[in-house]
Image (cartoon, rainbow, N blue to C red; front, side, top):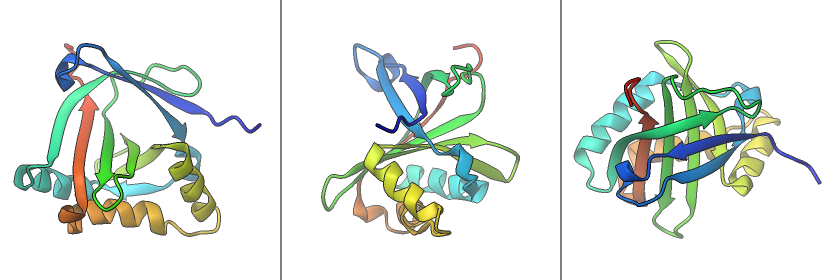
Length: 155
């Protein structure tokens, strides 16, 4: 059985209105080098201000790479989104690499990762980049979009 490298992400339950922290495991996608311009996040923050079903929460409490390196103090972004038509939930995890670009480091769930991996290895990012574009261009298609960010250094 093929073992995927995983990012371990712990979200602060209190910041999410829950009693317990939430642990997520994202399949490592960083090796494919897919980047998104920072303007995507500028547009996303505009939508967060406009859309009732879009939220931003500083709640990434602990973050470990597949090699168990601690990334908790880095500037990281995690989008969890639920598609309205069929309640499909997907997650995309990013790292700020410079002032203009973010690298997509992880995807969730595994089936979303598998399709995106198959596409990117054939030079096609239609599903992944199309999904991200849809969050900005067609917010009415999304039941919920949450942007989770790392906590400030004084967490």
